Length: 612
Image (cartoon, rainbow, N blue to C red):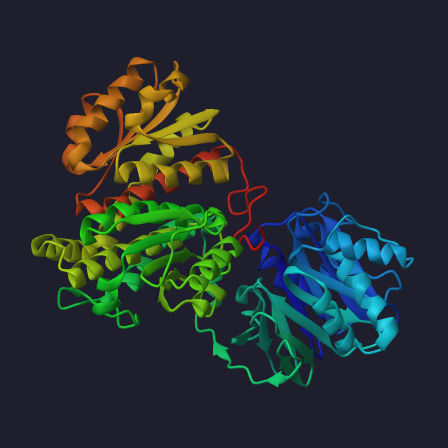
């Protein structure tokens, strides 16, 4: 959610901090700020509500701040309105400490009341300011920066990634992490912290991921990492091998459009290494056939678009494995007293691998004895590290807030899990298995065919972007696909949009259909095509404008009823949503473009939701 970056070295810090924050803008934010330890001014803090460019212009690109050590932050408001005062970094009352923070301090009210009783005056409405004020309070007792940090961490409760500066120790940054992503970057005579490796790619490719309870001290000479008992520990470094250009637009007007068109190649990376000799082979999975057969219950746990992947996965896995599969929103899972034991498989899906609700669900399931298999994109992320098994999607960096290629690769991996499990259980038909594997190999090429017709979708979007409410309807796989299409549209265009199972229309929803209402009717699932058509007729009879999505083989039949028809190539039924999502992504993109929306950074949204 919030973006964090820190630098200590021999160069001026402010320009590097601003550059790092610019690479984290995609995470979503409403204000930005930096703090630099200045030889003349002590800790110099500058911050501003609004886009990072406001802050950058204020500082003339960082030229107005002198100092070779500093921290920066982009904030998405949780406590207190988005304004200059509530923005990070937060300065302690005496000016000795500056703090940036991602997460939520759950007991901040108690601490704030304690400090107010000690005579401390607060400026902001945030939970984060208590960390800065508490740091100064303890420092005045112990006169040691590291010791004061330790006392603070023992007192606060909740989730945090913290970057801290002390005016009396102008050579170091101290960082701490619990339940929020934070990594360390290693350079030559300079070191970094960041909430996302994207911020550091121009400066270093050698990083290490901090674990919960760890504290790091960064100076120009090196990095020391300590565990929760303040014992120094060795950390393994990772080398980041993807190119900076992957996190740049490459000539596209928006990251979202670029990432939509990157999906065929992302699918090739996710699929090709796992298909060998006509079989799905997960060389990177530890689960054995015996373990798969021993599971009596399967959960898929995720949030947002990943939850919609799970909805599709339920249909596929139940069909292929003949096992009951329950899909749960991660934010509800741990509060529902789930029936989980050591015969339960929990498949956790997350793009970032850092979503806090999903992390909490994972830990709850693990505490109850479940086996955790995660599907994530970010190597070394918290969910990946805490899982028993992890399958990476290899989608590459995804910058736009609205996910596209992460969704597609998650879906492909989950489809392959269904095939592998079905084979292990002996429940999948051999002919169907062979057909789906064959079609998986062709999937990237067929997706390129869909993308080649993007102008047809753009034309339709230009004619229907002014609707205030849009409905998606479909059955079975098409219903689950509609959930994602609807979410994409509302995320970036701000149009009210809902997806419904077509069979539920007469149970209330059809009362909302009136003359001119736009309905996106999904009819790709061959077994229920006739029923889908009857629902199209129903909404048209109430005056709806219909945009239909179907397969090439059903185009002619659909065109008898609907004038605006989009198609995808025919493929195995379970793979149709992988193709069908692309026109829906493009439709959402072009509608938002017509409406003048901030497509890559939609209001109020963040890429990785690391608070509850």
